[in-house]
Image (tube, rainbow, N blue to C red):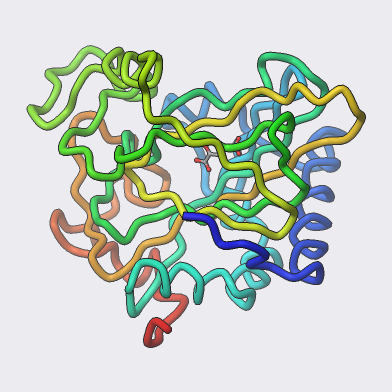
Length: 273
Ligand SMILES: O=C(O)CCC(=O)C(=O)O
C-alpha cells in the first residue's frame, strides 16, 4: 500500500543526514559494524548495526537500536500515525529497521525476493514494514516489487537464512516454492516506483524485493524501512526463527504473549485516524 508524499522534506533531510553520517563513519572505520555473515550466524550484538556493502549495494540493519537521535526522529515523525492508521492498531512498538542504498548499475543492486516474516520470532497481522523513499526511486532506480496477494498466504517459507538441518514445521514451505511463484510467467507482480517522500507499507507476509538499479545517470537510491509491532503481535518462535540479541534466552519473553515492555516499550498509543 503506497502513501504518497507521507514525509515532508524536513523529515527526509533529517533521516538522510543521520543515515549518510552513519554510513560514512562505517565506511571510514570510525564506527563499528558487523558483517552480514556474522549476523546470520546469530552472533549479533544490540548496539552495532549489521552492514553488507558490495557492488553498489549497501544494506544496513538495526540502526535505530544504536542511533538514539534517529530513533527519536522516527518516533516524532508521521511514521507511527501512518502505520496505526493503515493497520488499525492502537499501540506500536519498534521492532527493527533496514536501510537500502543502491549506487551504480550492477545486477547486485537488486534486493532478492523474500518476505519479512520468514525468520521472525513474531506473528501478527499488525507487524508491517514502513518503507520510506529518501530519494526518488524511478522505474530504473531499483523500485520495490511485490507479489500481489502474498499477504494472504497460509504458509510461511523456509528461508536460506534459517537453520537448514532441522525438521521444517508443517506451516512452512520450501524456499524454492517462493522462488518458483515469483518466476512464473503469469506471476502477479507489481512494481512500485516512488517519489522522494512516498512510503510503502508492507505486510509481513508480502513477498517482495527490488529491481536492480539500471539508471544510466549518476545518483543513488536510498530506502529506509522501519518494522513495527502493533496490538496483535505476539512472540512465537520455532526452529526456523532467528532469535536476536533481544529475545535470545531473555526470561521475560513468553510464547504467545506480546514482547515484554522492558525490551520493546510501547512507543506510540492512540486511536488510529
Ligand atoms: O529497498 C529495498 O531494496 C528492499 C526493502 C526491503 O526488502 C525491506 O524493507 O524489507
